Length: 183
Image (cartoon, rainbow, N blue to C red; front, side, top):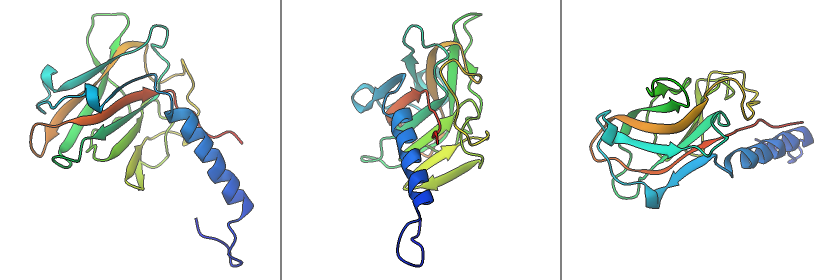
């Protein structure tokens, strides 16, 4: 965001950035469920059950998430994942995993945020500071707990479908109840 001709960032831009920062912190500081580096182990990337990471959702939060964040462990072996899916296990029904909507399944890399209910950015994706955000929704980010989009699920899982080389390893997998900035 460049300053104006007097060297000052206009107040409306500064206010919009402040709202964005507040919404980002409110949305992604408290995951509904997550697993971090110490809990995540190297795995194959062949689409099998061995190529998954499952998160148990807390009781009462079955439909309280609309976004997920993935981070690949890059320090040892670099970026490897080139295709993935995120799936939910319905609380009712036959017990078959369902692919969550709006997940494009491209590479993970440093960090990727997927919006499962269409509340993400209007653009298919954009990148800033090494992060990729994906969504095909209204751009409002107004998803709320129990909102339309996903669920109800008792579990959610990451499934690695293809990689440049194996094994692969995530350093973070979490699901969130993301909300947009409020003016």
